[in-house]
Length: 183
Length: 222
Image 1 (cartoon, each protein chain N blue to C red):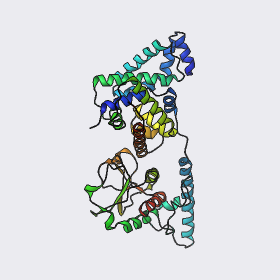
Image 2 (image 1 turned 60 degrees about the horizontal axis):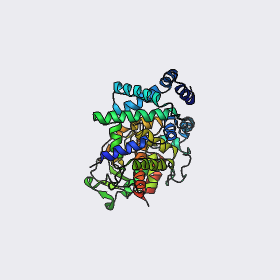
Image 3 (image 1 turned 180 degrees about the vertical axis):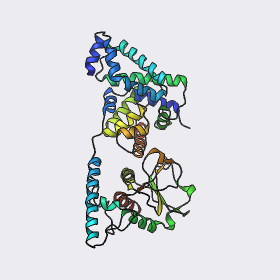
Image 4 (image 1 turned 30 degrees about the horizontal axis):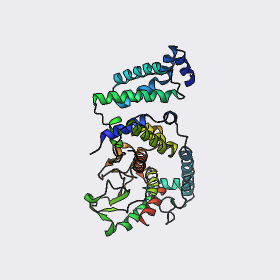
């Protein structure tokens, strides 16, 4: 079922919205959450919380891309749960965090909501200037927390190429953030 | 020491990216690339070459292809990479295989000024490097820092080899990346064959291609 039809069901307060959402997005949502939390039970709870949040926010929200909308919700919920449990997992989000640690210049602090939204804007600006493949690599790694091997397989590239590309992109992003005033 | 709080903030900022970008990343599927077609061309070319060799052998001609270590470069001869500079893959000595060409080049470039101690290899520099050593030797040699524009081609070229099928090599070759990753054009490019901050011995799984040989020549003879 197309996204706009599912969103309409939410607006009509039809419980079929939940069923259709699960049919279309359950696997993707579970996979994203599992990448962060490494636990099927926790991932399942996050999926349920996401569906509840979707029910509570539509209306008034009317997202164009329902998958992206739900992905953001579950990602936020999963990261919050990950931080509160301080789980140490070398792959997935822990390694992704490690990789991102060098991206923000040391003399920059991100204190306010304005800073946070400006940072998002800059990252968007940077990504939109990159090729589609590189953009997809970056978002699959740092939004969806997928492993290098998984990304390489999906994009029919070598793991070396994915690692090298992501490294270059982090360097370029850092250079951009150094140029911009984030304070 | 890495600032994980900033990393976390960056992670949050990425979480607020435009829905369109997220949707694009979720739904993107790579187009079937020319490599699929090239594989079939390679198979067809190998069949043609095999038939030609048998015919020539039958009528008493000389066998083509000389070097047992690299039968496949003859198969790949004439199969061009789209977008590849045709000069990059050519062999200056005409019929020499890429393996022989690489060995000749590395022997010539194994000079005193290129010698490097293991402890001095720059793993976390901002550049790429090629390091090599003759198998069985403790002498290591290093290229000049590699231009970033060449680095992309280098990574592609290093992954473009053909199966070694048990062939032995005379030189170990390693590519050093700025993040400390080390890989070899002699090894299948999967995560098990990537090391960090160290060189390593190996048995060749791949034999480098004309593309890599040409690029190596460009890098070392600047």
